[in-house]
Amino acid sequence: MARGSKASYSSKQKRQARHIEDSEKKGGKSSKTAARIAWATVNKETGGAGKAVHNTAPSKKGGHKGGKRASHSHSHA
Image 1 (tube, one colour):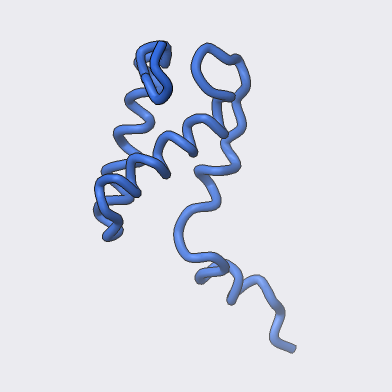
Image 2 (cartoon, one colour; image 1 turned 180 degrees about the horizontal axis):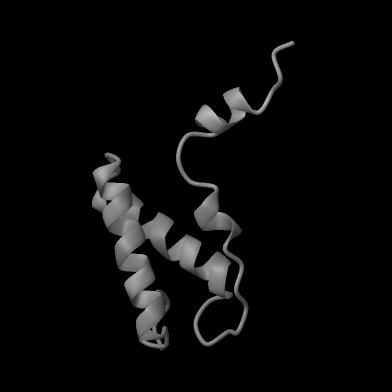
């Protein structure tokens, strides 16, 4: 199989990558960058093609680092 081929990924992994890629494009990323981020996220979450690992931390990290959550997490006494 050629390097970069997505043939051995499950339909769920391909669907996840499509959704992530669409989201990244809406965020202003180029198609190439969005695709790279999408597949890197799918690989990190599922362990790549044909693996049985599942780690959702990469998806939950999204958005601006820190963001609103960080600014509200400190008590202002």
